Image: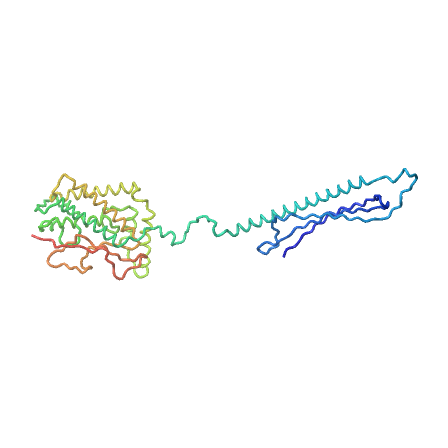
Length: 399
């Protein structure tokens, strides 16, 4: 409900002067000012005074009263009472103007105070309640879902399968292009170089297999495939790794540790998370000069050893055989990084029996291992491992 503040300033001056009609004395009272300021409550129902463009009203009331006064003595017709009408009029006008100025000054002070108070309260309300369309400062979201979406995400099974197939296709093409099936007598000086590439998956050693087979190229395909897969696996026994040192240090240090029951499940989940976090926190490999130097050195050393060990079966002894093998090993390193970064655990499987393929009618040699998922994204073990890429094997012909 609106209220009215009334400020009244009364200036009273009792002046006596004779009138020209009846020679009476007039008492002049000047009352100034009636100053009205509407006070409208703010929209929130508080009693705070808000600014208003209303101009204060000013009214001036003149009130005169007449009183009888003794007449001036008439000493002579030529003389009369002294006239005071001029000074009285000047005093009245001066009082009127002064009162008006005082009223205006008071109104200005009150209006200014009310405007300042209103601005402060509006500013407080604006600080407390921002408009819906006011842009807000972007604050980093530190919830689990927010930062986990920036971690390496699962690759589609079809993409993983294609990458695996592309790697082994290149290995087989390399062997078919640069090696041939010829009988070679392996002397004592050659044996150490060849023996270091024995996969150890079969009861027959690689040296004996090369001496007894009519298709040494098939054995060479198996040997290259096994060596490359071992070099991109964090838990392999290979002395050579194409992966960053941060990827292999922890798995190698945990070899031989056994966990059962709940501890095993918890460890599996933590291990999956560790891999993803390590891949995310590790510098981008294409910009990590230290890793690239170490990787290229490991690849060059491995290519040189393989180049020398199987040179007796090579078609091209001085051409592009070595450089082609180096390029394939770099592809293998990239695949190893991708597999390591997956939220689920992926392992290479060289055992044919797991996939329903038995060894009958001779030695079946695995040319391509299977890629198997053993845990879900959260690290929970799968009751039945999921085959991403099946293995490929063939019978090794013997003499």
